Length: 353
Image (cartoon, rainbow, N blue to C red):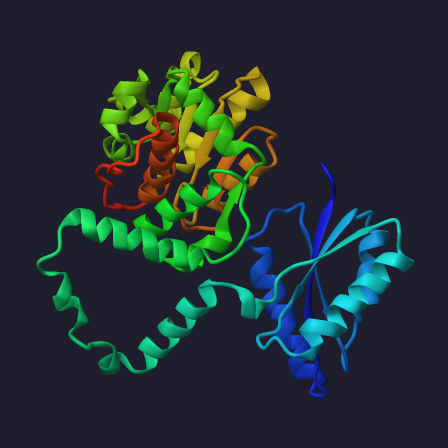
């Protein structure tokens, strides 16, 4: 795997101290949500240091092989259209030992509009009621679902995804109602394909808790012949060591090879799966790991991304049963060629252990 780094490229300001202090705080907060192996640096187009070239050289010194340049610019003016692409192209020619990739700018992100609406709503809450909710009173659930999927597709915009990833993201958007989650969803290469093929073969589906099991599309599971197991249901008693859900995963170790593991609530379940992969060579076809919370959730998902097996995850403390179920049901529908209902999605009840 290539060693990667990201350079956040800002314009820069003559207000040197306040500008660099703001960037340092941005880097600190972003680093808390990103995998440990991903190097993060700042650079400035003018006025402040380091320049983009110096930041790239720093990456080279740390043996970074691929550098992604992310412009922190809103308006698609001359800097975005001409100056920055030309600068990246020139640097790529002068530094052949490192690959430079220019990412879409901050202003091109689809969740920016949602963030703007949230900001206005926080400042002017009374301006947000216009009576428009009344028009949905006589509409069927199926019509609401279709309208929701159209809106989810619009939110995704024209960004490119691997085959199947778009359907998973649309389901996650529908389940959470949160466009800002898009930037936190990560797929390993081929993850969707691996999960769909396993489900078509009738692979076992292993849920961490009852909320996840209850939300899976039972009709599609039965048509595909996929047995479902729940780690939380394997142990009634509270164990002397470890957690009930983690020990439940140990009880299910004989079903893990070739399975689709769906962890939406308990970080300890995901950590146990990771340990079995590392120590016993267990090989699930796919792990959907979206445990929610502040303790072990972020760490377990970072460990999953470094494991080398197919995964779908949500970085940071966000996630939950509804996210895991949405991803799993999208895969089930693709496996069965089913365009029907997703089935019930459980309400999130916090991070179980």
